[in-house]
Length: 132
Length: 132
DNA sequence: ATATACCCTGGAGCTTGCTCCAAGTCAAGG
DNA sequence: CCTTGACTTGGAGCAAGCTCCAGGGTATAT
Image 1 (tube, each protein chain N blue to C red):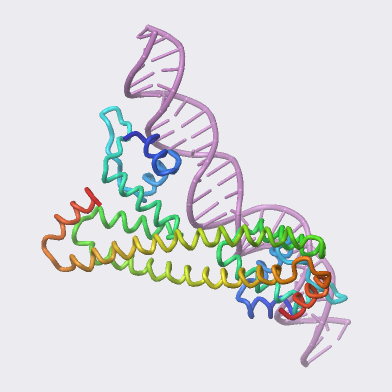
Image 2 (image 1 turned 120 degrees about the horizontal axis):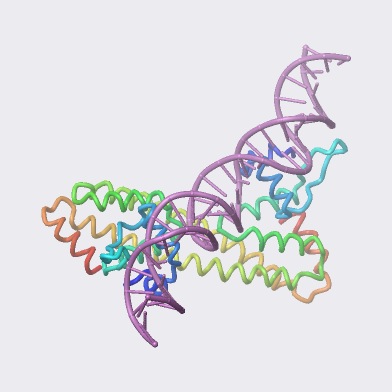
């Protein structure tokens, strides 16, 4: 698969794919004898995993470390697992935080719903600003 | 309340608090006659709300717009509500995406659990790389 | 009054994560 | 062979969101 095809399939720009490889977020991609990237299935899977974890806000640094360890083979399994556990914890934390913010947002929206079209709005708004 | 106290209470740097006011993410904070910020309850509430929504990844731009509208009074309620609805939708989307990534991460971790301490690790790792 | 600690503004600098570009190479059609 | 278009690298540029700093004002204690 060429970089353009992978780019299209996973909706990641070719520049970003090259960038990811450059910084070690994905392992070196196989090349044709002419030096052109030729993504195999393993490379594609890696791209897809990284896209997924990056979308969740996992820091590139942690993923780079994970990728580097994976390339060093078997003996690094425990370390790799530790990274995943750490990232899972952080991700769970972020999700919980976002859930709280969502609740907060819902309450704000409910308040707007209740006051819609009512002439006392301004007073309530002032109250809102003053005590909650 | 001085900026240092607010900074401590909400765990936001004084620089960031000034920055937020500068860009209009929070409305102008009351000042002493000497020109020093003196946060009142309304200002603190605003800080707290913005901290919450920012932590959830809501774009500063949308929050700035919301704050600007709020300062224009009553007539902007519908617009403010529209912003919140839009941001809620985006937030729900991000949470769902992160939940998927979490599931993915959990599967990866389970795989490490299953293979822990087993000599066939390397083979499975290769299989993993090749087909899953 | 002067030392010390905190506050002010405006603007420059930094980090993360891309994104774009120049100059050159590779590959497939005519 | 030559054109056309996609691919290559290294490095510069960019956007968001802070973070830091110089130069100066304020406030409180001695």
